[in-house]
Image 1 (cartoon, rainbow, N blue to C red):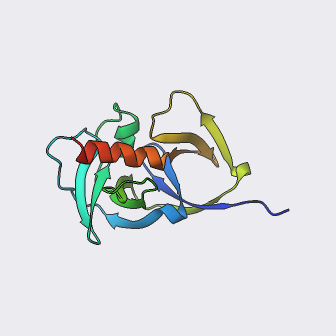
Image 2: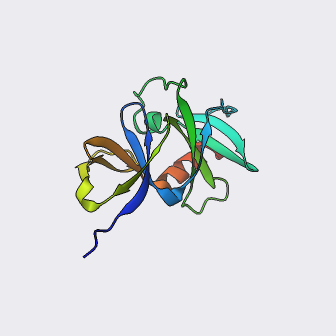
Length: 153
């Protein structure tokens, strides 16, 4: 029997990785300073224009842990991800990442779930992939949270 593999993108954050299905990633951009919103939480950095869309840019680290501190932009990139929600305003979200993402095939054997209680609403799971801490976002909740913060103030 063949082992089921999922093709993923592991994008570096400051102290961990965010892991997403390859199909959820649209593009990796050089970091540009987003145009700030008038009033927004610290994790919502602003928005950028991308292929005709206004894309909200977030610090996922600050969203899931308000004590994460300042995010460095010296090696930063913006990972454009497709949203899965039914939002009419947020079709893409930009995540600030620290460096270039890497392709990774993940199997059930290579993934170990860490913590299941007390996770942020936008975090589906925290896992270890070959001893590297990785965060799996809840894309529907993330989309809703970003839409609320960006456009429904």
